[in-house]
Image (cartoon, rainbow, N blue to C red; front, side, top):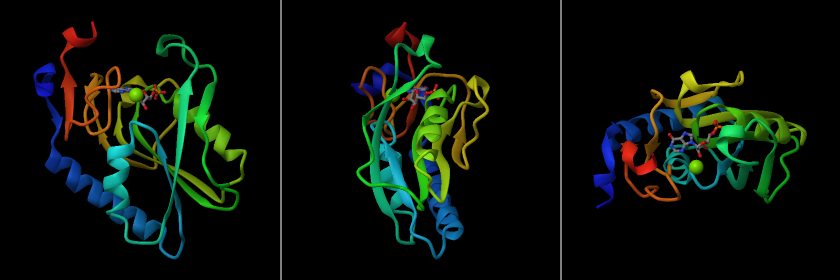
Length: 179
Ligand code: IMP
Ligand code: MG
């Protein structure tokens, strides 16, 4: 069973549901009268994104992007590659990028840099999880679900080797699985 590969739950279903609802309400208030473009970064953010958009009660449009860092995580810091770009232009639009987790911050740093060149009216970041102790660039989410310690987590969209995304909460993966 999938759960046998995990050590313990770090963020429960109930905590996720309550916090996602709060984030949706906050976004609805902050963007009242506007129609923001909510951008899902595939694949990790899918589960969070699906819950988040349903807790927003103002009009939104949706778009999807796939970005990956060149090379391995260990040598990351370089460029990112867009494997699937947004379907629509964002010039003059209010954009919210939805991300599963901010670790070093390098990926989102590059992604926001790229999207800013397209001249959106505004660009904000909404992440589900944040590991502030791992940050290597000065990057802060505008909306953040939970600060977590430096542990490798899976579930609620997050993977190890493309697996565990379908776990319904955030779990610490057993070290023996990835070491
Ligand atoms: P960053 O560029 O170091 O911030 O990388 C962020 C990306 O690394 C996330 O979008 C995840 O795909 C991945 N990542 C970082 N930490 C974890 C984790 O604990 N579990 C699963 N994926 C992670
Ligand atoms: Mg990933």
